Amino acid sequence: MARLLVTGGAGFIGANFVHYWTAQYPEDRVVVLDALTYAGNRASLEAVADCKQYRFVNESIVNEDVVCELLREERIDTLVHFAAESHVDRSISGPAAFINTNIVGTHNLLQAARSVWLDSDDAPASHRFHHVSTDEVYGSLGPSDPGFSETTPYAPSSPYSASKAASDHLVRAYHHTYGLQVTTSNCSNNYGPYQFPEKLIPLMIVNALDGKPLPVYGDGSNIRDWLYVADHVRAIDLVIKRGEVGETYNVGGNEERANIDIVNTICEAIDAAFAADPGLAARFPDAPAAGGRDSASLITSVKDRPGHDWRYAIDASRAQRELGFSPQHDFIGGLQNTINWMLDNEAWWRAVMDGSYRDWVAKHYAVD
Ligand code: NAD
Ligand code: TYD
Image 1 (cartoon, rainbow, N blue to C red):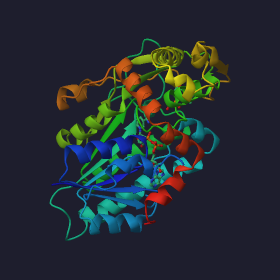
Image 2 (tube, rainbow, N blue to C red; image 1 turned 180 degrees about the vertical axis):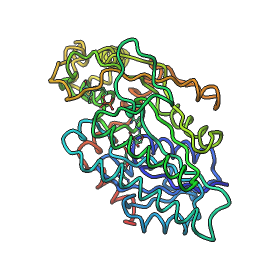
Image 3 (cartoon, helix red, strand yellow; image 1 turned 30 degrees about the vertical axis):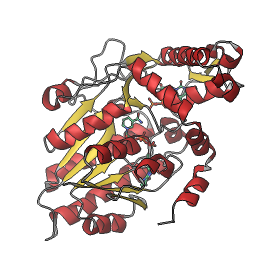
Image 4 (cartoon, helix red, strand yellow; image 1 turned 60 degrees about the vertical axis):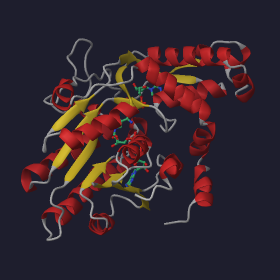
């Protein structure tokens, strides 16, 4: 039986990971540590709220005393680190929070893990610090460059990716210098249930349903590799269980697409959903699809993001070869699941967007 501390478990990928882990390993202890920033929603963990192996702690990873106490009190042996400021556009308008959480916060976790796991008498027999990172640390690719591999030199270009790169280096240094048992995964763009509607895919779905403009940065030619979130959390499980200590694994979906193609595909899927279900027009009267018009009529070209990376692509052959990982969802299937989930969970996304999920939480939970 493992005892996990999951940082950022109320965020998009963290919540999906907690759902997966509690279902897959019901005997394991799962303690979530989350500061509940705008991106963290306790409502995303409602499904596990009554699970007796689960505990939620509303605190910041920047608080080292809290982390040390939790590691000791809960006898944690596995720390899975998702907590981060994660949105590139916010890192451009306000980088300081990214430095604080992504660099200082990660270092606090490492210090706490070192002190409890390496320098104390009651340390668990073995431990693991798994760090969840991004392919953005490698910078931008040209049209015919090979995908990022684990040996591609780091060349981050936004404050977000620079802060994640710094955290990756610190994690590696704590292994090299102190012998902390770490692994790192660098993953491409995720999408799926519980993603905050500021990222490309959920934002476009919500705006198409509400009849708002679909803002495409620049000419829309920028390319990302897309992975359905359920595949990412499975890959993290494989790295934790089979990955070699001190190593990094690149994870991707092998689904490179230009932004404008993604937006058009979302529009077509929404038009098809409205055509198949006449009830949607009554629920979303402002959607062009409610009046039989194309959602794509909302596509609007807007000013490009400063320093916008042009292309990301992943060479995931190491994870496939050494961990047996390959994605189980292709982009079209994953996108359809995501749109269906958004249609079925309108209350969730409306509440997280206007902040009213906090009222919902206050009604459902006593304050920790
Ligand atoms: P998210 O923004 O949806 O969630 C981040 C979570 O961290 C939130 O619950 C937030 O409340 C919490 N948090 C923020 N600051 C905190 C602090 N100081 N202390 C404790 N909790 C704090 O992010 P996400 O998309 O779920 O990403 C999770 C991790 O995966 C991040 O480390 C990110 O860099 C990485 N990643 C994300 C993607 C992606 O496409 N979303 C791809 C690759 C890697
Ligand atoms: P995003 O979801 O912010 O992820 P990242 O920047 O970490 O890759 O953006 C994905 C791509 O979509 C990126 O090239 C920027 C672009 N984009 C838009 O064109 N319009 C938008 O409104 C957003 C949020 C992103």
